[in-house]
Each structure stands twice: as structure tokens, then as C-alpha cells.
Length: 285
Ligand SMILES: Nc1ncnc2c1ncn2[C@@H]1O[C@H](COP(=O)(O)OP(=O)(O)OP(=O)(O)O)[C@@H](O)[C@H]1O
Ligand SMILES: O=P(O)(O)OC[C@H]1O[C@H](OP(=O)(O)OP(=O)(O)O)[C@H](O)[C@@H]1O
Ligand SMILES: [Mg+2]
Image (tube, rainbow, N blue to C red):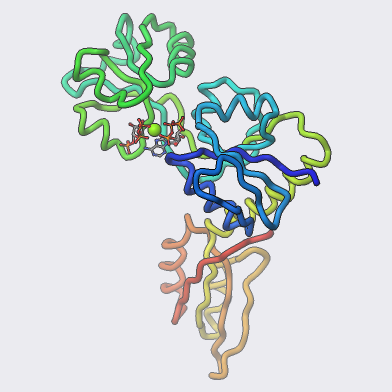
């Protein structure tokens, strides 16, 4: 039987969230400890646990069909892969940071400087695009320590909360781009694998849509229903059911997470009572 080969990070920041996503998609992985390859028991899928930095080229070369990987790694490896979905976890940015004591005068500040990074291709492309002559000093980890020990004048690395920069007396001065975990695929999959990928993406999209929406139940008197329906238009339209108490209704709808608190305020102002908010497990529009 044909199986879709999926690469996920062996250990590190993406490993747990990637496995959790597959689990939420209803895919069970027979995961023996220390196994580098595992089969799904209820979906034609094989998981390969690989080093992050190796994944982009494995996808490009067709060693694996798809992968869950940080978009920053795809950019750094200049891999020819198809980006299919933004998965919403491992959000970070690739930025330039300099010692707090320095005054940043704009990108020209970087002229002639030495910049420590684990992302040499990303940095060199950026320097070239901005006509900056600077030296990339490549180190594989703990990049933030470099200016403090005299190894470099600045760094180019991943920033998330900013706490590593802060602890090392650095300040972020320029963001090259933002990144999240993405689903990528080899661009030349055959028909059978493409169909399996479609099925996998259908499930992932249902999980992602559910995460950014909430199911809302509330009670309202009849004369408030119109206004409440305007606040909560739902996927197609809200469900309205009579309560046992005359003149009162129960209204059910779906609201986007980003509009959630704003909507709750508007609902209360419109006369809604007994508002319940429930997470959605899967959402198929
Ligand atoms: N502090 C962070 N917050 C959020 N996401 C991050 C953070 N640091 C890294 N990431 C994301 O997680 C990915 C994996 O990072 P991680 O540090 O686990 O692996 P790595 O050291 O880049 O790779 P390898 O598996 O080769 O050791 C990064 O490429 C980036 O997309
Ligand atoms: O802005 P923050 O929330 O502090 O996160 C940024 C830090 O996280 C990553 O390092 P990681 O912990 O993955 O260590 P590594 O260098 O060993 O990969 C990254 O390389 C930064 O050092
Ligand atoms: Mg890291």
C-alpha cells in the first residue's frame, strides 16, 4: 500500500506540536521510543523523525513527501518545496539585534560590521539586497552570546519573546521576516500521494479552523434576537430555538477567536444572558 512519508523534527521545539497536530487529525502513530521511523495505524502515513536542518532537502529530493517545519528553515536552505499550510505554532521572527549600548542609525549601521548568525544564507541575501558590506560569522547555537564575548558586533537570529536578547544585553533593531511552522511538500508527488496529501490537508484544515473559532450558546428575549444575530452571524446563520419560558430563545452560533471578546461585549450590551462558550474540536465549512 502507498504511504505518505511525513518528516517531523526528531527533537526540539517543533516535535511535540507536530505530533499533537497529527493526533488531533485522528492519526495514531505507533511511536516506540528512539524509533526514527513510525507507522500510523489508521492512516496510510509513515513518520520520519529527522534533524530540522536536514528536512528541507529531504523534501526537495523526494526522500520524504511532506514535512512540518519552520518556514525560516525552508528560506535558509533555499529549498524548492511547496508551502501548503501555515500551521500557526512556533511563531517567531528572524531579526537583527545589536548591543543595547549602541545607537542604531538605520541599516547603514551594519556596514563593515561582523554579524553572528546560524542563518548565513538568510543573512547574506538580506545584506546583498540592502547593499550592505558586512561579514557573516556562522555559529550553530547560543548566537546571542557573540557580541558580549567580542565575537561579533551584531547578531541575526530567531526572536520570539525577546527574553534571550534581553538577558544578553541586546536589542532587536530590524525584522527580516516572520515565521511559523508550515506544511510543505515535494512539488512532484504522484497522483496517489497527492490524493493522500489532500486527505491529510482536509483534516489539518478542519483542526486549524476549529482552533480559531468558538461555539457560543446564549439566551435572549425575542425582541433582542435581530440585534444578537447581527453580532453573531455564524457560519451560515445562527440556530434559534424557543426556551420553555415564553418569549425567550436559545441562540447558538460560531465566532472567530479574534473577534471573541469584542463580540461578548456587544452581546451583553444587546441583552444576551447565560452566555456559554465552548471549544470546537473540528470544523468543516
Ligand atoms: N524561541 C522560539 N520560539 C518559537 N519558535 C521557535 C523558537 N526558536 C525556534 N523556533 C522555531 O522552531 C524551529 C526549530 O527550532 P529548534 O531550536 O528546535 O531546532 P534547531 O536547533 O533549529 O534544529 P535541529 O533539529 O537541527 O537541532 C525553528 O526553525 C523555528 O522555526
Ligand atoms: O526570544 P526568545 O523567546 O528568548 O527565543 C529566542 C531563542 O530561542 C531559540 O533558541 P533555542 O532555545 O531553540 O536554543 P538553540 O539555540 O539551542 O536552538 C533562538 O535561537 C533564540 O536563542
Ligand atoms: Mg533553536
